[in-house]
Length: 429
Ligand SMILES: Cc1ncc(COP(=O)(O)O)c(C=O)c1O
Image (cartoon, rainbow, N blue to C red):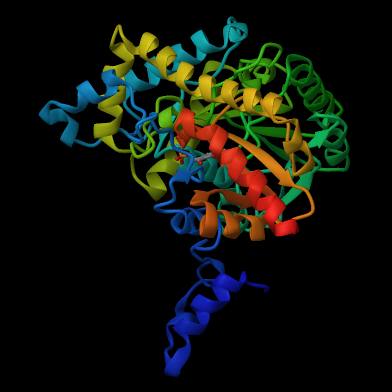
């Protein structure tokens, strides 16, 4: 088996000087590594930079964590928060989250879906989905611009393979490439993530309809389709004409042969990155109540078998926040903060047409991030130059420079782009 060079290096350490520990590891144990060169390593290198656009959290303009006051005020909790939560999750929180899915996705009205099962945030929910739907060697079909942790979850965790298709065509989502990737026999597992990490792109209303139709037609033609919807950045859509609901709403009753799995949570939506709470919900056409309950029990069984249950204290805090009458107003305020940064980016591009000669900006309309493709300069060399000489930290993924505007103070955004522009000119010279 070919190991990642980072795994090779750990394995070399574990077999040095006659050490026998490497032989004691399972095949997955031998293949796993800590991704110290990816987002985490690049983020660490940018520590201390005066403009730090690396990290997928959100910061206020003064650099403090962007948080909802109703979450913070719920931190003083009763003793019951010390007890375990059920493996399915706190029943009141599950009910509150289901109500929120209904409120945030009006077109799901009248369609049946399971009660959400609580996980230890989205990474864990994705990993539970991998456990439930993928066998060794199975493929996960996804766009080629994706969150890099999917590799550890699906490939290392489940011995599955990522099969990517082209993300963008003519400034929009490449729905033809999705259709092409679904050809062939056998069950298909598709993963879609809107708003997307790293691009900050969400399908337009029309594209969402086309995507849903492609998946439905594939299922109706006899191919079983499992659609995993990573809705981590749900709700942060900044443009008109962009689909503001989850594809879950369109897919919930698409076909008896199409299982829609919604993976979501408060991590990014409610600005509680360290709380570690997420949800998995299931839907398909003509599902009965007892069948939906059976899927919930399967998911809760996976939770029970790997973390037993998600943090009780975080679930209690979130429930209190969702019951606060200030919750929606406070969320709107924080949305406005991020939307303002998005608007500033558009304004910077309008004022600086010369930037187009130095970098191409990828389509973006939502979420925490946007990406640029440097022209005539290697992205990784540019990243290093930005840290070394411009005190600016960015992330490089798939040859693109990812900018987390969620964590850059609004008034530093123009300087961030000027630094990128100047660094590219300098490297070209
Ligand atoms: C697309 C996407 N999915 C999932 C996650 C993980 O979220 P969580 O922190 O809830 O595990 C992230 C975090 O960066 C993400 O970008």
